[in-house]
Image 1 (tube, rainbow, N blue to C red):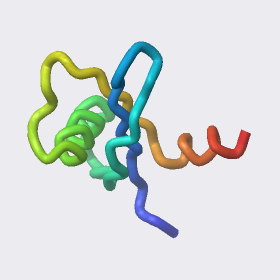
Image 2 (image 1 turned 180 degrees about the vertical axis):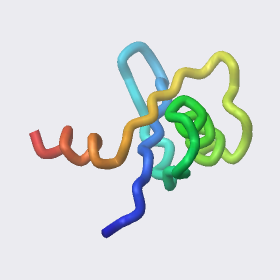
Image 3 (image 1 turned 45 degrees about the vertical axis):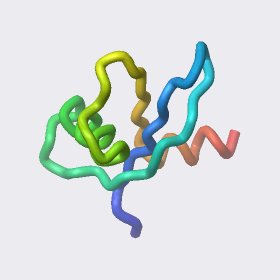
Length: 67
């Protein structure tokens, strides 16, 4: 079984999203904190205030690709 992970996306224009990275999930953190940590890990620095991101569990990303 693979380790749970997040897919991090950044909005580059209205309704246009770019894949930033796939990062491991950290068990034990509340969901919101875990997603915020995923963004920071994907970027390698704190999240910029004016940027929009989406963080999805890898399992949901794969389901979306299958449809």
